[in-house]
Amino acid sequence: MSKSLLVTRSNHDEATKYLYYWSTLVIKAAKQKLFIVYDLAGKKANKKNFDSCLKSNQPAILFLNGHGNATTVTGQGMEPLLEAGKKSAVPGTIIYARSCDAGIILGKTLIKDGAKAFIGYNQKFILGYDSEKRTRPLTDSMAKLFLAPSNLVVMTLIKGQTAQQAQDRSRQAMLKNYRKMTSAAASYRKRYVARWLWSNYKSQVLYGDVAATFK
Amino acid sequence: MRAGDEIKKIALARAKLMPENLNMAIGGSRLNKLAVIKHIEQEDEIGQTIMRLELEYLKDLVSGAIYQNE
Image (cartoon, each protein chain N blue to C red):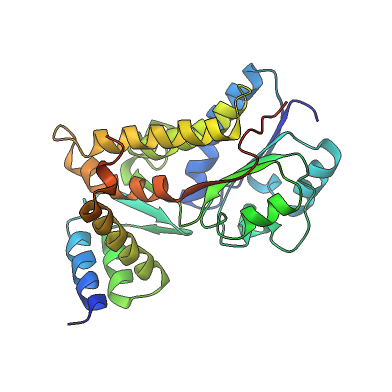
């Protein structure tokens, strides 16, 4: 399996727009680590491209950004990319799904389909963001509290560390942010959204081989 | 009063304190303060999710789960 990363990042509403832009930081880091990056961005995040890229390139890491539910993760325009019960070409892949609920059923199904490991959420993934920064997501310090820790999942994997280390580093970063957000020194806005981040912290799950790496 | 009514009251009271320039993205919805209040009042899927989130957070506060990793 090559040192490669497949990223899907739809961009059709405000939530996906934030994931779209914050994923660019992971893509940049992966390229610096000499990963081959297959970037299905915006309209390119469709089922046809996704299946084709999975089959022909067999990426070591799959980073999904988009809406989801217990059985599905979607791409542009809510088109399903991965669905439980529809066997996917994921053998040997480490998957991180930054989407709602996919850890309930889909994640376990993907492990049965041969994925090495799956990290995702068994509840809604919640993002707090500043309405005045929504045209410039990367400058939104509120969103950073949520998305920088989640980016750490793939940032850790591309360093050659294990799925468990990726999960732990990401959750530790969430916990650190949560502590800051609930401190007396934090602004009212940060204290208000802290419980949303706590929900993400609790619901981020890891299935499969905890010792899996991209190598 | 039923427990469900209590948590709805708590979630609504909390939603009314939400800062105006803050948005919540959850399950494909973009919610400002008014939208959060509306979903809770209607007790639709998003409203139920927000109420459950409040309830679980309160449980974690009471059980001390939040302080376990300090």
